[in-house]
Image 1 (cartoon, rainbow, N blue to C red):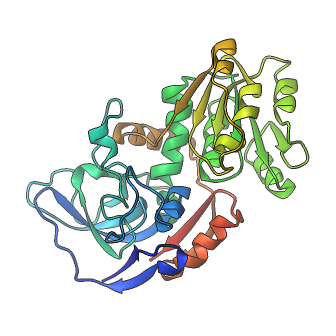
Image 2: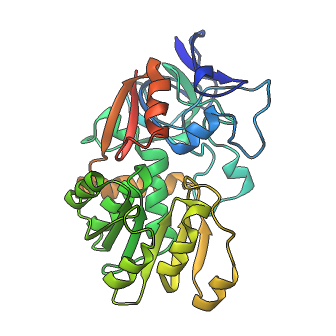
Length: 339
């Protein structure tokens, strides 16, 4: 079978398609024939040797991708959750089943340190897979494990938002577009930012109540305050990091919630934590979620028939081109590789 490998010196040119022996499931394992994987910003960092709780070593060989959809080929001894023919999604954290995060749970991420879904055949723990809604395509299922679950947890587990609350989604990547779709379905008021007017028009079609071009209006906290009659946003999905956190602090309401899920805008200006004292806002780091959260999200998507936005597809052998499109910010929603 063929698989994607990445190793030192890292970078897009280091992505290789290699031949490997077909794996065999051991006790408690499930063999899955992959049909699709989706790209996350974390995967781009990983390919460049920049992701993990420790820096990638020159001896590491990574099979990338946490997010995939496939069909069960065989099960190992003792497996009870699946049988041959079941369609499944891989879970970002193979060992986070329920409850709050812990070190033991978050070191079980697919791609690194555990070999990821970027192979025609791969074995997974039976606890690291879930069945998925039948109405979604394989490509759509492949977008769910990281981006969708991150948005779901931020909105409904950590922030505990209610209908009528105002949420701000930064940019039009995977997490923000899922956040827009989930928030709209839950009756939340939504404001989304982008540097592209064309992407903002697409966001309106998905239910965005307010849109702001942050290149035309760098101080986008102003439109947020205007849309909320001066109160500020109840929730902000912070994907920019240091480059946008100051505006998020200006835009959030007293007692509001900022979910920090990315750093795509770079380091930016130094952040003054004293600002949190003045408005009693909650600033929380957020890294995906548990299997229980994933399965509750899938139930809601099935009920509301929410279709993920797959913007671009590539053959899995063209991973370099897919990552180049991501790095250039060409996508709206998700990029998928097909097997």
